[in-house]
Image (cartoon, rainbow, N blue to C red; front, top):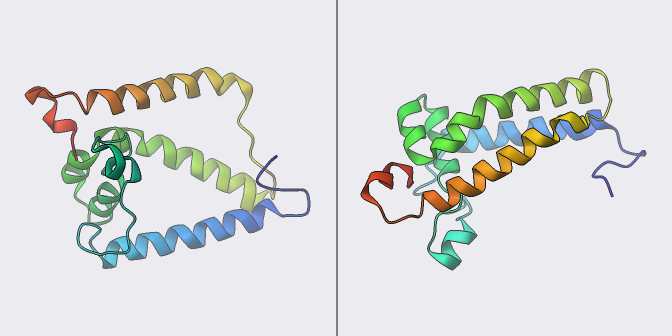
Length: 140
């Protein structure tokens, strides 16, 4: 089942998405995720005491909003490396949804890249939890 049915407009979905994104950026600009109590903690870390591949991404976004790229990289290097690609695909999807009012679908030729990305994310999640001093830069 898809997120959008034929009765719902892709334009409406993406306009709501943009509104929520601006709200999230405002909250990150106004509040510090490390001290504000309403930002959600990482459930994986709370349960296992291990860092997931996304741990530190909220604080990295906060650092990016403040213009501190080096600090953002320190919170989650994989997130910062992938950030330009995510922004590209979001803008591409946003263009299809808002301007053309079409649902953006990923072509099957990209499936191998998505598989490689998934493997990199899982490997990053494993490596950042290894107990070696040389890998401490990967921890948030």
